[in-house]
Amino acid sequence: MMDTDTDFRDILRNEGRFAPSNALIDKLLMYSEEIRLKPGGVLIGYGQTDTNIYIVKEGIIQLLYFKGEKEVTFGFAFPGTFMCSPQSVYMNHPSVMQIESCRIASSVLRISKADFFSLMKQSHEFSLWMFDIAMGQFYTSELKMIQINGSAEDRYRNLLKFRPDIASAISANRMASYLNVTPSWLCKIRKKLLYE
Image (tube, rainbow, N blue to C red; front, side):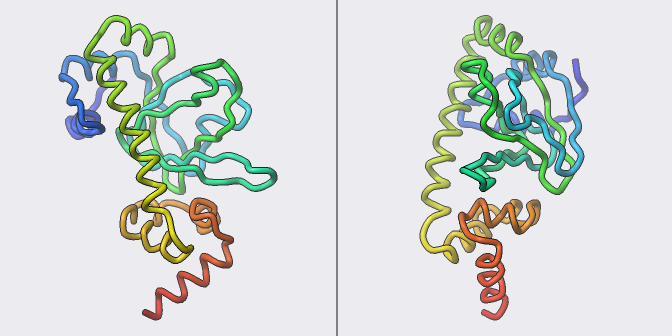
């Protein structure tokens, strides 16, 4: 079993609305392997088939995809977040997203698809927990559409208000991509807010 601290167990327990038992968390952690990522280190690359399930342990992870020639920041994962390449896990297809560490070092726990689905078959509690996690991620995606909405300035203000940790962990180019503005437009917005 991997050695993990009480704080991380609490983060896992509080990731959703369903509170798993200590025994279930211990069982999940028994199947996991910790992977450390350097700043900007790639966990899953574009076009790579990776059927593992990951949980962020430390740092901030970003999810990116290409829209034509333009790289777009889709979202971020924080400690306690479960993530994977849905294309790979569900259909065994190459990932259409890249998953990588932000400007700070990160660590994730890796669980094989076989072990993950074995836990689902063994434990009704685990299945309920994972359903809750999935619903929480759908909720967060919908909330993002509401919070990161409006004018470019509104989106930037909301990012600072609701997720200041993201603003300090990513480059200006990635932030502009996430807000769907050009880097020069983001620079103008930042300057304007400095003088308010």
